[in-house]
Image 1 (cartoon, helix red, strand yellow):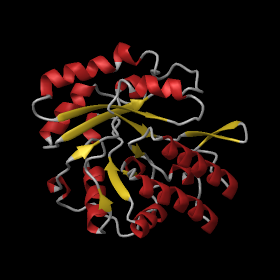
Image 2 (cartoon, helix red, strand yellow):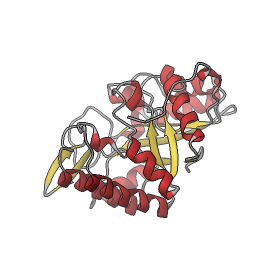
Image 3 (cartoon, helix red, strand yellow):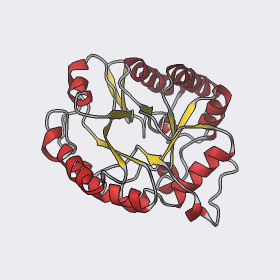
Length: 264
């Protein structure tokens, strides 16, 4: 939980510039179309809206989300409609949130050829030949280090414009060890070197009992002057510019983090 964070009474007056972590009805656990989010962004005076719904990574086979093979069917046409309606009022960017697994460059190229940017959301990661889930498997030093190693591999791939909720691996932990902080610091240093923004994610406060962003992530971003992007991780248009997002943005600015509003 972040120290010194609070939601000010005048939170509605905090102006937001952009958001790049925004979901869509296609993922099955969110609502709204690209046009819905663009309309909400325009009404709130934003300059840039990026939609980054979940896309199946190459090792996943379930059909809950769209994949690189059918992205043209239901997802990308929404952007054409939104740009016709709101393109003269706001910049609308095509993105996806997707895990990174090495050895699948052809699959990722199908996405990068069609998109403006990709967000790393490493909910799943490989370790010792097995698949792990960041929400439930970050329970000891070794698994946490394996997670941050996988994030570093993703940064090295050059595919991603930002790293979503990089501290998600601490979701089940009540105590973060110095070893774990050291593993995260290596990731923060690499992201800083590559100029890849790390995300402070408002959804961790909105729906996940302040599990993230963690104070440890904020401290490391301050220490290394890492680029930071504040995101709503909106799963409905009405959460795009809500009190959690506005307050987190104001908090990051107030403590002197290197906040960036444009990531592309």
